[in-house]
Length: 276
Image (cartoon, rainbow, N blue to C red):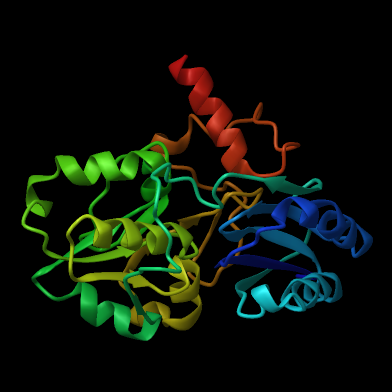
């Protein structure tokens, strides 16, 4: 029985006091039996939480009580157990790390495309479709005809764009990611670098899988997620690692330590070890 609600959330909004927000927010989550990982930075909030429905809804209401977070949106899924071992609230320089100064989606951002309109856009012959996720995520599943930047981290994305001959003429570009945050920030960077027509999937893959019927879908495969579910299918049901592509096996193993809060951090540690 799926009694645990999973909420993936993010919002780019100025949070000058983000450091002071951490401890009270963590305490509120723990009090309501909510676990997961939330990142706070001067540019906003990002993360995934899981717990009893009442607890997760209480945390969401608590966040939205702050006028700066009133517009916070989230995507929901259900599971039969906790997908995190503890609650972590971390302070970061960015809520999604691009490591390029002056990129602010609150100032400039691409055009949001609703899931219901996404198929038409990416089916246009002059549109270049880019998966802004990492290579191990791409291996689980992606959209038809999407380019794979073959990155190990989002920070590598700008260099990949500069190296692509088919992007030097600044074509119309449509980008996507898991929940929308990486492709949103990527559109801001693209617009700052001379691209005029830049689109991104509103709410990311998770929103698309929720809104678009499978028999009308252009999504192929599963969607990797940064928690113990490993991936979700088109109905957003957890797969628990029942199938892992060969390209991702170096980050999915019995020794991976998830006590740090998110699979993304475990992935980072695995990659650091592999390249050191």
